[in-house]
Length: 294
Ligand code: NDP
Image: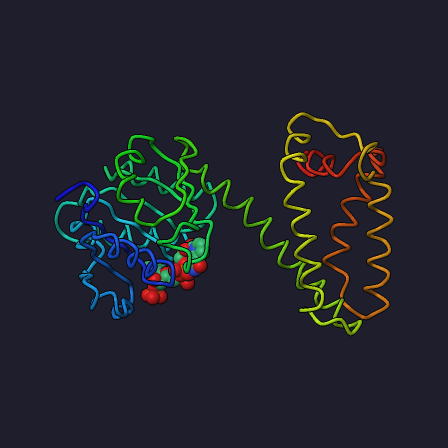
């Protein structure tokens, strides 16, 4: 058996766990699956997966065990369950692809360390449907040696795998910041669709323009990031925060006029107003990251 076809296990048969197991099977890995509630593996069994009767049996069957469940508490419950089973705890590498905070990732890494279980943390940045395709993006952190050792098997998930460093919490730090960007953007988009609808503009009519606007935001990311890190805040060549505050004021006014709750926009306006009140009215939007991070 080649390293590319190392036996793997997947613990957690939600949509993401199932997609991961399907990708391992498609890549030719002998794949064992386990889920707290049995019978959720669907057609994975018909495609060759073996269902384990316990977390410990799933770990025992593999060189690499991926756990992907609802949160870190569930991961801990699974690890505790495996420890409680009679016999020696298997020493297959545990790759935790469950989303949770960096503190919890470090706690789980410490717990695994005490149990002698090699532990790598990771955050999946793409939807379940992308797993096994070139679109997948997974961020990993924890011992570089473990990442390197299991890279060939993890390549079955497809796309891009990035190792961010030895601190097991680092992938989760990126994850939480990126998901904050994602969900506040989606909230903003839905808010804009609601505002447009109240003015008889269907979401599909706004969509091409919204897409162009989202592209503008994407284009601004590298420059704003460089400015934030360098402490370059002058708004002389872009929009000054006084101007941003006025623009947000108009939007809040129209939201109130049309009866759409203004909270999403008011939260942004409150931040800008506070930065202006603190004397940063002439600065660019880059100042907000510094202001909020103080
Ligand atoms: P869910 O987040 O809906 O989690 C469901 C899974 O968690 C089930 O297998 C469930 O088992 C298990 N579970 C819940 N509580 C426990 C527990 N106490 N002990 C053991 N198992 C438990 O599933 P997803 O597959 O959607 O997501 C898994 C992870 O992947 C999450 O952290 C999510 O944020 C992340 N992710 C998901 C994406 C997606 O597109 N779905 C995209 C990117 C990341 P049971 O069936 O017994 O209830």
